[in-house]
Image (cartoon, rainbow, N blue to C red; front, side, top):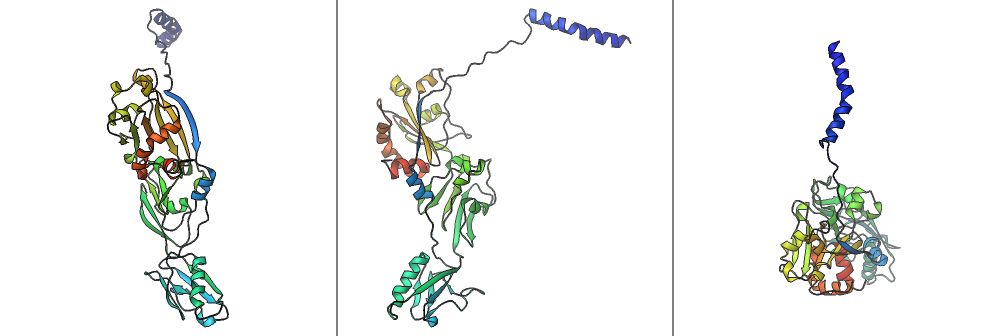
Length: 355
């Protein structure tokens, strides 16, 4: 009973004790956390022209023949010249494309077909048969596609060369590589190479946000690259001693760290130059042009500015008045590292400088 009474007395006196602590200055003090202002002075969005995007991502894809494919060939009113019977592959009628890229046909013999579309093959055969037949009417049809291949490189659980019996979308092709190692993948810098060109695909929107607008049709021979975060880098050009790529450290890189790594001498730059650092940021088919006040960051008057993979930083040699001036001054540097840049930058400022 006494223990119960003692407990009640403690609870009754607790508010008085807390009030006394507050009066004695023992209560926790309220901390006034002030948010530092952003060092970004100006920003403007830029996008690739819709015509350019359609040409790169949404153009019709034609199948190109390759070794292992089986095609049937028929010549109207001349069944003896047709290649619709026989065994192009086990149980598959037609003509087999050999490893050398050829098919064997009656009368015309060996015909090289690798790399041709169905329409191109028909035109070629009509020209060949016209040496023996007046106005030959040739029909061709793909029976089996065995030459479709994709190259998956980087952060896949099963990267490498992958084969398919049909044309695939980007997601379908990536599924051939198992799963993506998201913990180590640098999706911002991932890309597809098609016909020797990097395509501006936004892999973060495709994989993280489910934006199927980024799920393009691939063609045989395409390469899908998902680089590691260990390869993350920004590019610093202009009034620095060591222009070029600057690697991230543990996935992070601030503007001041990048400028320091590039050998920027702050004492040799005017405040006007430091207040006019330019950054080109891009992903997929869109980009952002930013003017950043590095002088404010240096003097603790603005929050740190963290770069993202693929960012291009320009330190002006002299005061610049427009982004057109910036682009003209930075073009030679961009051309020197064109193969490393995000696709947007290469397409917007190198392939089509007038866009």
